[in-house]
Image 1 (cartoon, rainbow, N blue to C red):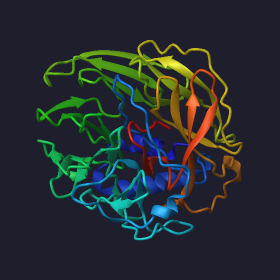
Image 2: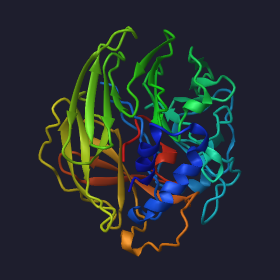
Image 3: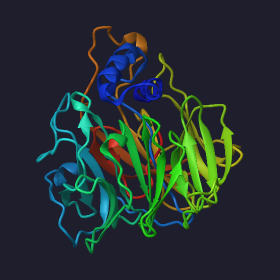
Amino acid sequence: MTWLRNVLVDLADDSPQVDLAERTIATHDRRRRTTLSLLAAGMVVVIASGLTAAVRLLPDRPQEAAAQGDDLPARGVEPLSHAYKTFCKPDKGKAPKGCRDGGWRVVTRSGKAYDVTEALPSLSSGRGGVRDSPLAISRDGRKIAYYSAKEGTFQVRDLASGQTTTAADKVPEGRLGSISRLMLSDDGRFVAFSKVPDFKDPALLIDMRDRVVRRLPNRWVPIGLSQDGATITLAEYSPHSQLRTISNLWPPSSAGKSTSVILPKDYRFSPLAPDGKTVAVIENLSAAEKPCRHGDLALMDTLTGKRRKATALSGLAPDVSTISLRTWIDAEEVTALTMSVRCRPASQVPDDEPPVIDPPYQSMTAYAVNVRTGRARKIATYRARNFFEIVLPGPPGAP
């Protein structure tokens, strides 16, 4: 399903940045027989600390009630439920009211919606180029991190007090890539940034308090960070699923101690579990003629790659086609964000079907899934264009 990931892997090492959009679209057109109808995929940056906090999501009600966004107030904003991007020219259907093209809109737990005008807008591949501008929400919903258009780097903002902290190092807009993600620690001290294509620029772990930066290997997606920021867990998806743990990250000049494991199958990873040593995984069984297929849920040791006995999922809607594992709710339950979209075998996609530049908005359902029993319970509903344009509090997932 990940056409964009494949395209960017092909182009990243030798493509000039100025023509990435045109080459990406052209390559997608050649490959679309092996893609899903409505999804684009990429890498996802996530974070989890060693301690657990319960995640409070928006109650199960339509997002349209909070569709009109005002500008984010300077202070006094209650904790957030989620955030989503508002691209304004979907291929089908309507855009949210008051849409700002490529902008982030945050929604509070009570349903109030605000546009984050300080955050640099993303660019659509069909209108002016390709650029992703990421946003992250702390697990308690009280802080956000984003790329500040004014400052030319990343900021962390406390929503209640309005206090902002700006990274010491500038990050040029050209380094944001076509798909980028932020991870934000629970206390707001650490921000990690990674993206594709890398254009030789490293991924970054930023200490906002001490104003220092640690370079990280690019293309490795951060999926967990210890509370003190000294140990990070990373995942890689192409050409093989891999896990990597780097410890002794500080001082920035240290080499760190790295342990890697190459996995024999293609997995979707959750963030690091509260125990600090395992992740939840779902095997990706999709193929060109049999898209939207997934395996059972299992737990995996991040250092060895050893997978425990898999458990069949139950309680999801019968037409669920895609699953993204998100924040851990507690030691027993992990969030699974799901969509039910039309999945066509490659042979059923017409040769003359044009590529979808701006996908329509889709309904998404979040479940809390017990990792021991596989039983799921519904907790929230949302609308966004795809998994990669919606952010929940805490670590996002890695489809």
